[in-house]
Picture 1 (tube, rainbow, N blue to C red):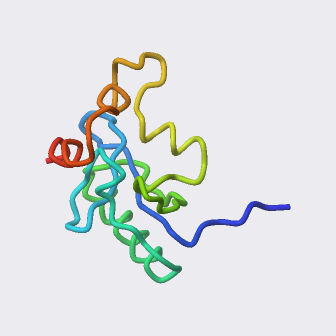
Picture 2 (cartoon, rainbow, N blue to C red):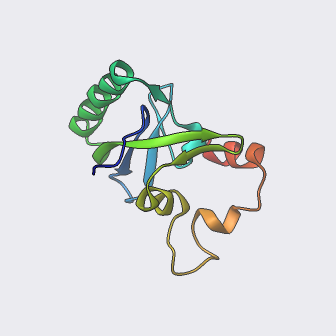
Length: 115
């Protein structure tokens, strides 16, 4: 039996300049933080994000954009699948690197770091 897909999505990709995982924001930019991502609710909004993915890939700002199934919790946007949760945290071999190194920072600080 296939797993039920979420009706809520964000768009992710890797930034071409450095390979960092990024998420499309409401302003059309890219953030390293999933909490800054524009959230698509429903098939029509997901289709709009897919069109944005094509445009972003053609502009060569990012590579390999795709939709991620997410849920919204009190603590923010959380990917449904384990692989995507790992991508939001950065390298998993050293906890002093990547986003988990600043996991203790509050949401306001993380949003400020996203620029």
